[in-house]
Length: 193
Image (cartoon, rainbow, N blue to C red; front, side, top):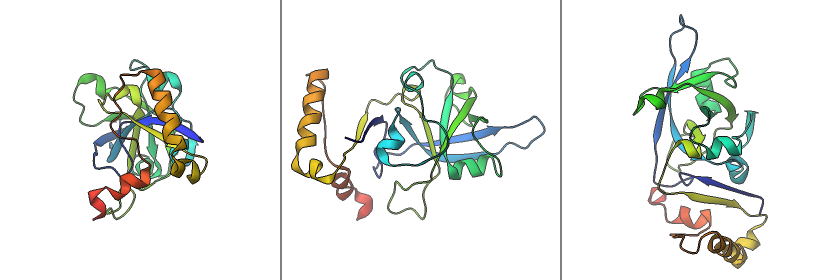
């Protein structure tokens, strides 16, 4: 295994959430707003999916696991260009434009910028992306993303057996709804047809 991470969504999946952000500039600047596709992720998500980090850093384990940790966010390069044109977004602050509650309006520091990447086969280009630490965005579904060292491990079923064994050791009552390679999930995605 080359990488393992948890996320609230599956790439190329049918579940999507939009997240509107406003850049926090000085008081005289006109606020810049942008909307992006949201995913809540654990540490190591970008490495597990092969998404390049362009600037900054990944979430720490403390940020990814603690809902009371200071607000941080990772955005993709398209979102960074919209919110902070001509500037480095890392170290700047954003807030949710339309928060469902007051806590969601708290400023969040941009700690990283990742490459733009596809997660829909029918879109005209990669969507803008917003990534929150997994603990900050409760979702009753969690997806485990595992990047295998080679395709033979996946095709032979060896990886599946090892994952099921580990999950059973963690909690024998843990419901596993589906365990499949991303290619199999893509083949079942209605957007493709």
